[in-house]
Image (cartoon, rainbow, N blue to C red; front, side, top):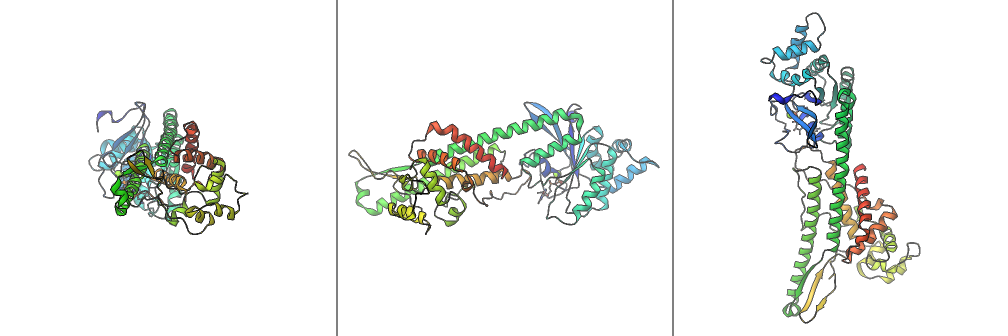
Length: 482
Ligand SMILES: Nc1nc2c(ncn2[C@@H]2O[C@H](COP(=O)(O)OP(=O)(O)O)[C@@H](O)[C@H]2O)c(=O)[nH]1
Ligand SMILES: [Mg+2]
C-alpha cells in the first residue's frame, strides 16, 4: 500500500471477517457503490487480495476512511501464534502488534487486516449468522478482542433465520462493544444511517468527524428527494399534456384503411413517447440515488405499469371510483365527463350519474366491466383552414389515467430505494405491491386533481406548481417510510 494509506487525523474502520462473509457487499451498500470496478463483490473467494482504502469525502475533505480486507485465512493458527507470543500471560494489543511485525510471511492475510487495526482503526466484523459458530470463528473473535480496538459486530444473514444466530449473538456480545444486524443485500437508507450512528457509539474519539458525515448524508438525502420530486413533476406534466398529431390528406380521408393505419401509428407514437418520458424520469431517479448497474427497463409495446386496460392495474393503482368522483367534484368538474356534473359524492345517486354519462365512464362508475383503454381523438377531428383534417391522439379519457401514472411511478420509486448497492444481480426493479394513491387524503387528492386537469387540458397551472411540488415531495417521503 502507498505511504499515505494511514492518516492519524482521519478516523478509520476496517471491515474484517471470513472470505465470503459479505464484507465487500456490506461496504458497497453502506457507501452506495454498485460498481465492481470499485468494490468487487463476488462469490469467488480470493478476489480481494489487498486491503483497500475507501475514503468518505464531502466538500473535498476526507472525513472517514474505511478499509476493505481480504479476510481471515488461517485464524486458528494465527491465534495460536499470538498465544505463544504471550507465553504464560494473556494476549493483548502488544502481542497483536508483534504478530503484525513478525509474521507477515506466514500469515499474509491476517497481517494485512490487522495492520490498520494496530495503527488505530476501529473494527467492523462481518459474519453470516446462518452459519454454525465454529472454532475458527471463535479464533477470529479472540484475535480481534485482543487488539483492544473499538469493535462492532455486523450480522449479515445470507439465508433464512436459523438456530445458529443465538449462539453468535451470545459469543459476540461478550467480545464486541456492539452487535448489530446489517443485511448487505437489503439494507436501506435508515439502516445505513444507523450503522454510522453505531460507529459513533463505539469510537468516541472522532465523534465530530463521524457526526459530520451523518449530517452530510442526511442533507444529501433531502436534496436527492427534492431532485426526485422535480423529475416527477416534470414527468407528470409532460405525460399529461402529451398529444401526438398528424394531418390527413384527401386520400387518407377517402380510404378507410389508410386512415386507420395512421390512427394506429399515432397511438403507437403516443405510447412510445409516454414510455420515453417514463424512462427519463426513472433514469434520473437511478442516477440521483447512485445506481448505475440497473437500468429502467420499459417496453413501450406493453406500456408496462401504464396499461389501463388490465384489471390488475385498476385494482392496484389509482383511486377507486368514489375517490375519483370526490376528487373530480372538488377540482371543479375538470377531469372528464364524470366530473362535469360538479356534484359531491353524497348527492350522487348512481342512476343520475349513469344517466348523464356515456360509454366507458358509465361502466366504470357502475362498477361493472372495466372500460377498455381507448385513445379518443383527443382534440377531436380538427379542420384546419383549407388543408384538411388533423388527427390528434391523447390523453386517454380515462379519469384514472393521471393517478395510475403517478402510482406506477411511486411504486418504482419504492423499489429503487429498496435496492441495496451491494447487490450485483441484474434483476429488474420490483414493481410488486400496492400503490399509494388510494391512501391519499382528500386535500392531496383535490390539489393534485386540479393540477392534473389543467395539464390534461394542455395548459398546466403554473401558479399551483409550487404547491404540487411540495405535495409530491411529501408523497415521496411517505413512500420512503412505507
Ligand atoms: N443473499 C445474500 N448474499 C450475500 C449477502 N452479502 C453478500 N452476499 C453474497 O456473498 C458473496 C460474497 O460477498 P462479498 O461481499 O464479496 O464477500 P467478502 O469475501 O466477505 O468480501 C457474493 O456473491 C455476494 O453477493 C447478503 O446479505 N445476502
Ligand atoms: Mg471482499
